[in-house]
Picture (cartoon, rainbow, N blue to C red):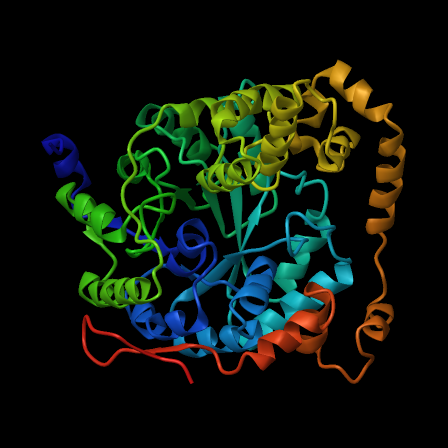
Length: 482
């Protein structure tokens, strides 16, 4: 039952929302499987719905997915989104990398890529993580000015985590450090869906107190089933914007449903900023598309306390189950998750977000299947010990005996030299010579760089026109493949 006292005191205030359907909804539930045609069939409606911002899939990891798996031209999709979404801010995650499991590109490539994306009109605001890979002391001194020079709004994310070192003072200090970069927006990013009502009540006031007047938004996932009610608590405490998704790309491991959060906000006395009639049409279209293409439809998850113990994201668990099944070791799943807790502790409590969550689980799997802890160590764990992933990773707090063991491994010297070479900023002209010469357009050159050559680009073009989705009547859908 809503609290009548709260309802009365909050009446007249407005609840505002940003949409994650095309980006995080697709990433969480459809393995980045949102096609350009699906966006095209709904984007104009989304633009009219009254969101503060809409996430759009335009950065490196999506480029690879579009070209390699969906056989679609990512640049064409970017231009389409620029045409279809004109009134709403278009935002996406980005930084000094294209893919979290690959070596960071030269600065010249990053600069050219974002310049070109902005020129398409597909990006108005960049969302950048701040406390997972040493970003503030690493690329930020050149990266943030670059984004500003391109005219982008800056939204900085502080990731939430549970560990002995992620204390109230940690988040207060991190807020002060982030505010110093003068962002337009700060948001608390709860990638694991680990926030509880009690924790948001203690943490969010600390963030607001140290925000220096910068609006603070909330982004969470429904992994534990608590995000919808945590959103309402954050709203009462002053969250400027809540990140939601449109079903069928809400719930599950994605964001809360806009319909659920907006309805509850109104019952609490808030005015809501979105046109739900328009969004019902979007929901019907995307649901019809999901059924046509046999894609998952997000549903609420049951509360699972184990999530607070191992903190392994749902997508990583799904992949782990698949790998253990291939190894005929699925019966070891619980032992691997239990070992993940110890590996994370040994490493100094990295935030369980890409790429750290994958590194932790992979090493835990080796420890369990080989019957001995750290008998074989993946390169990424040695790089971790070398400090390649920055102070935020937890490296200064890792187990010193393990650190000494890893750094004494001959492989550590090789990896240190490789990491140093990767940091070299290769001139753009040199890279162009390797990928077709000065006659190749910027867009084609960047595609070749990201896809590591032309093979997959040629396969994408050979696949023919992209799939289109034409809505003839609702909720019926006609799928046309030319």
